[in-house]
Image (tube, rainbow, N blue to C red; front, side, top):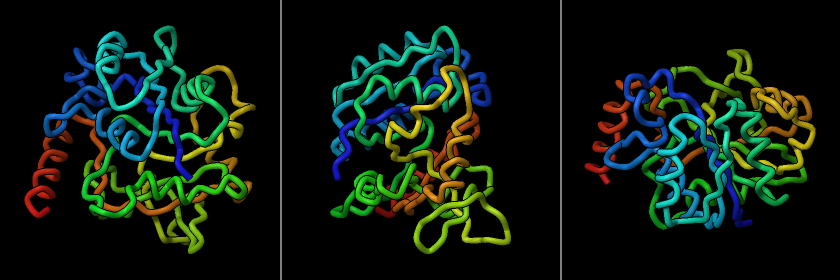
Length: 243
């Protein structure tokens, strides 16, 4: 299955990234010479996505100017200038600008490097993995030792069939959520119209036995603080040196 639409969550304040984000939105902070959000947009375009919604709030004018100049796919703006909607509310609002087919959802400050050339990309594999008949979410996940900038904690436990539950030492098989998923928009049809945390819907999917994940190929990076910029760039340099 080729997924042709996406949403990129990019409206956060980036408070942990201050003072950098006093003057620039976090998604436009450059890592190895490239705005963070462009890593996500380029990955989506390479996977066959044609249209993406991006939500904006902090330094929204800068975000819109940057997105107007992006040529890889059609971009629609979900404007949250009036009020931040949190990740769940922002997603529910943005999905209304797309059709009812499955949608990639990506965070704008998380990306990966080191995919194997000649093989399907992580997003292409995730699209093939997602089965709307038995999944509410299909998540891209990564082993903790293949991350840079992460807090050192696992998010979920993954069973042999890929089903996910909240991580505990008892269940083991811990994985980190890599900030990218596929969802059927209908799963959020009952979402509130104001701000809420998407974790409530992850828990709902777990309770229904319909939260699944597949593992990322390569190395995953998250950039949440000024110090993490250097860590991410060093990791990228190391990967390029041995490519």
